[in-house]
Image (cartoon, rainbow, N blue to C red; front, side, top):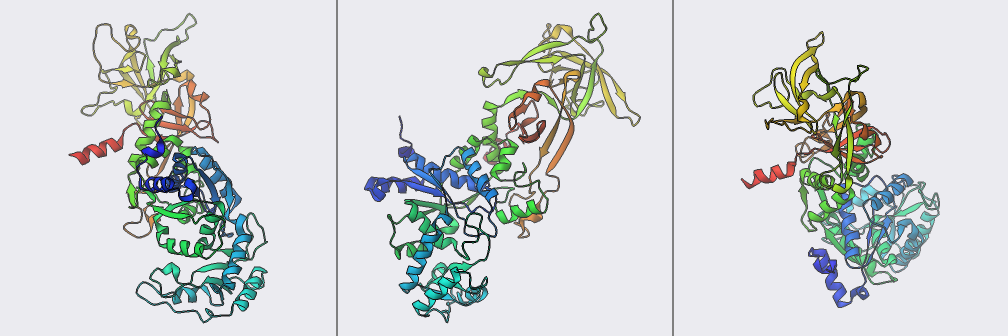
Length: 563
């Protein structure tokens, strides 16, 4: 059996492989995925999940799911539960589900230690003043007038901050590092701020909350994380990560932070703040709207977890940020669904088709025939199904033209076509309504062409899907365009929401499907023949989201680029 750790060639695996070879961390590998529970996970988080859990898996290690729950105003149990569900749906089981709030007491004790050691102080200035004094690149920082406050005084104030004696923003605890450091994160960063807010786990027990930088590295150390894998925006935080850990009596070896490029996809945004705005303003139907780039939205739309994992793996783990084409992601989805999705016939925009020479029984009722059709030609084990056929059918309105344009090979007066798996038919006449719109097509069928093949060998240029009208079940189909019209939302104006597509969804409520579609399980994805892959909504049976079309747009893009 091949060793997946030995085969991995990405730069993170090379670092981990070298560490295990030299016995660093006792050759142990432990990672973590640390989301903030202030929204739903999106496609960018999927990359981080695959990197963190995948790295641990390759090296026989473990990966924790740890919630960075240090901002009580924006966090909620709903988000916690959804994130746990999303991680498991993607195919990963956390070694432990933990929270930064599990460590609040230890973090506070360490904060007191920093104050006693003269490495932290309480600052009475407001946030705007502190930010201004921090300076900028090439601009010197200004030391706080409270920087040399006696340790005993800072310790007393810190304890009173914890007790809830002061209002929000009145004071904060800052690390005492170097106000002239080139790295801005080392210019006396804030470690604690006063927040009189109810926490989703600790309630009102705390009036002060740690910042991300104070909670994150220390949480890694408490858990025994070996490799703290995060995206490139945290590269500048790494010197602070290392400095804080160096000041403390850690229970294990110092974790190693490694940064990798985040995942961005065209026609998509991954800002939780902006995604929340779409939800709150009713632009979409919640975090799980099938147009959203959230994992729950992609799941509702029918994206398989295996396709998302494969896409995240195939795009590679590098240190260079890039934006992947959404067509590439869709190609992974299409490839997976082609193997797994059963086929069904559905007519989205029905046009009635009557076969005038179709036989009737002794009572004058149209005869019903049945055809055996493969459920999935890619998987013989999926078997076959019986599909009813009668003289009263529906076809796609676009499959008929009374006056056909050039190179129109589908149905038109006098033209013969094949009904998929059934018979050859020829259109003879039309019925129109008062407005002149064709509402019914009359045709004849060739009884000798059962199965779609003429005994005399004549050829037809078009094969069309159909549904028997008396056996049809109604369904609703949601067709999607890009949620954002621009490949890079906001590139022109600076505000991604300016590029929202007002026509990103089209609902077709009069679609008709073959009877077997009614048996689709909640969330099941079917291929509607000639139309694309459609997912049965998990909460609204019979409401189908088009996952992707059948045309491989990524292959077409690659072909154009090769010319």
